[in-house]
Length: 107
Image 1 (cartoon, rainbow, N blue to C red):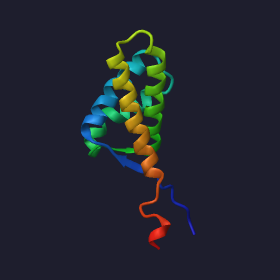
Image 2 (image 1 turned 135 degrees about the vertical axis):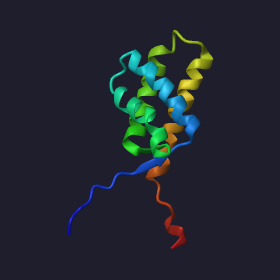
Image 3 (image 1 turned 45 degrees about the horizontal axis):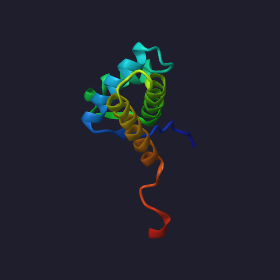
Image 4 (image 1 turned 180 degrees about the vertical axis):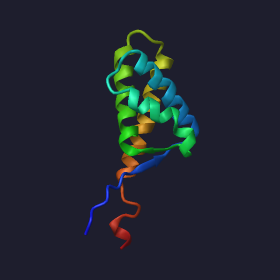
């Protein structure tokens, strides 16, 4: 029996991907560690129907939360809320991808 490397993917709405790419660009500009890989993936997401590997989405969420922390004192509250909102939407998508499609109570 061989093991295959199955990687979970997440389909995200186009606006979320576009917002994430914008914020990730800011994170990369500020040299947030690890922002370059998800930035590249989110920029190319339109080519793959906005389907991204779960680890990339999780990394993007973490980078955006770091960006929010680093810029909390220097940006407008609305900009900070926008960054955090996108990060939380990405994190929630990752959490949903870890849940089984059906719960055991249906069996």
